[in-house]
Image (cartoon, rainbow, N blue to C red; front, side, top):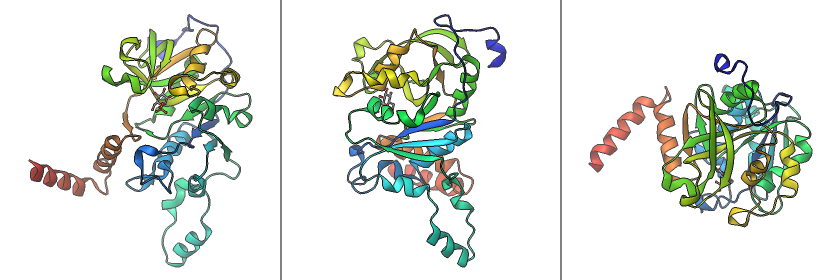
Length: 308
Ligand code: G1P
């Protein structure tokens, strides 16, 4: 990307200082009603794709991108997400006693002090959830991960975004194309100039538009790098689509004030907020795993034959 961007500055705004992205906010307070009854007593973020809960994939992606501090915006009944990233002393002692290796637990280890939780007491919307993390985010740019959106790529989605951020600074969102009839379920961008491969200026944003009002079929796919000013914008953000305080509305107000770009993720995205997306992710990831691929391929073939 670098060679395409030499000398480029956003036409819309003056460049601003590029502080490193060290913190990430994970809004995990949602009730997960689409997966009931599975999510009655466990958080939807703890539903596993094969042998890792959804939240683990998002945290792995964050770490790969150089994120140090994880900020979980949680709610009632979400304690197991935090437990997942704690040291399970009894488990480790028992496993060690039985001669079992502990490396399987490696992804769950967090540097002391690098996991912070805040509560969103009332479900007022994604914008409100992010705003709840304002004191921990402080005065630096930060990433946001919506763990429902499972992004698989090499490099991962956030790493691709951080690379773009290092070039253009400001605010970035990941986008992807969906069939036109699906746009009303998402935040949709009005794309501007194409800046480099996979990088486009954002001229406007609208949350859950009617099909006729959608400025494109490029949707926000659950990864963001935002400047801390968004917290002040959220402070006085009124209710938007669905009667909720929308992050998209606050971001829309920042366009023109600060650089705003969209990164088209080169990789695979699974909407694990939907049952079909969840099954798709499970099958595709299993087919991509060296320890399972052959057995799963045989299984899928057998099932396809039986179904006809
Ligand atoms: C949220 C965002 C939306 C984005 C979507 C991605 O919507 O508000 O802009 O496109 O996540 O999954 P939600 O799915 O919470 O309704």
